[in-house]
Picture 1 (cartoon, rainbow, N blue to C red):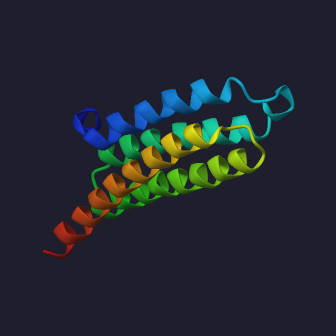
Picture 2: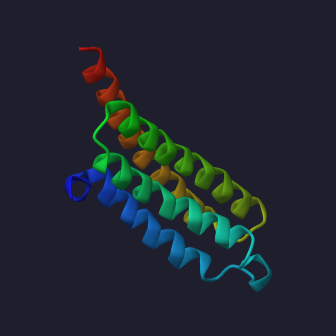
Length: 120
């Protein structure tokens, strides 16, 4: 299980915990809408990273890594919506946004290293 050695995967799991903890306080009417979307997106990121690591082909790996990064972008939008609807405080928003940005940069670094290695 190579993915468990990656710092980006560990950061993503921290992000999963944070999103689950913060969305517990969302209004009940958002349980099957925004909360569900956020939780699916945040779980999708490390899941697709892990699946990509398990693939043998370079293009397959990169494909799943890109899906993982896309899930982080989806989550970023949902966090912005949560702030606008006042489900998150400004402090909570900033913590989440910083964590998403850090994780996205780490994921982009992994994608870039796959691309560089593929060209060589």
